[in-house]
Length: 263
Image (cartoon, rainbow, N blue to C red):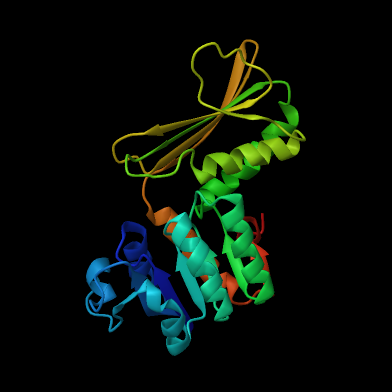
């Protein structure tokens, strides 16, 4: 049985993760953390009844992780929080599933160093959807043959998403740039903005859109659009649960969903 701890357990993603853990035959929730609702049962927010796991203050992360003997910590919270909590978990010998987007290079460097120094295993991905990771693979292949085409990335998310552009859009841009040996990124355009050989990246924030991503390759008289549309957060949770099961049997190191899915 895999012992799972969840950060942000009272939020939309966290509570859905908790719900899915209760349906798994191979894992159990042993700890739940948030910035409020301390002492309440985590099952209340996941609408699964009493689980006997109280919501703990994230300030007590280290002591609770050690007490509960957590094997994996799942973190879909905010960059500032993840940059502090992930290294703490690593020092406790706890493996990590990190889905937080918007991490700065400096924050990511601190997290990576803690994972390596403490010899734990971690999956870090901007998107845990199986479909999105296949989308990345298709985009990579297309870029090999469409290097001379204009490339634009358009992403849409709900109006409460804090970071822009999305981590998924940036990952798509990175995938293309790797194939084409380096591309400049332009975020939106205004005024006089003649197009060069850059990758244009555009963010839409509206309503309750779960997540749409389109990569446009446009040439003379034709265009190809590669699109992924998320209809529910459940797809991200499915991938995170799959990654949590997978990561416990891996050697220490930092992995991606490509590794989890053998892509």
